[in-house]
Length: 70
Image: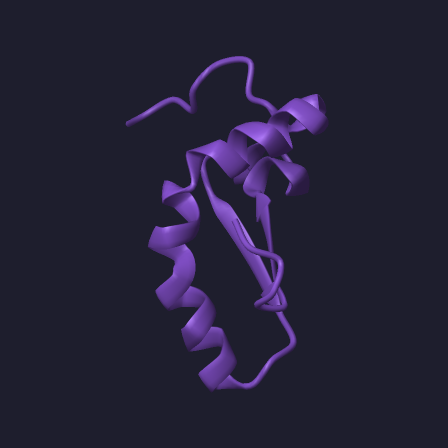
């Protein structure tokens, strides 16, 4: 992930059980800036080293099991 785009991204479970398996984005930026953040999404998700470091520092956000599929 990257903290320079001004877009907050949270797991949907932060908003209740029904939100599990979803990502929730919050942005108070112009459309062009939001598009930049969306374009960055595949890059951010691929940065597994940064994701792992974040989860190490914030273990309460680590899932105990994968989201159910289907």
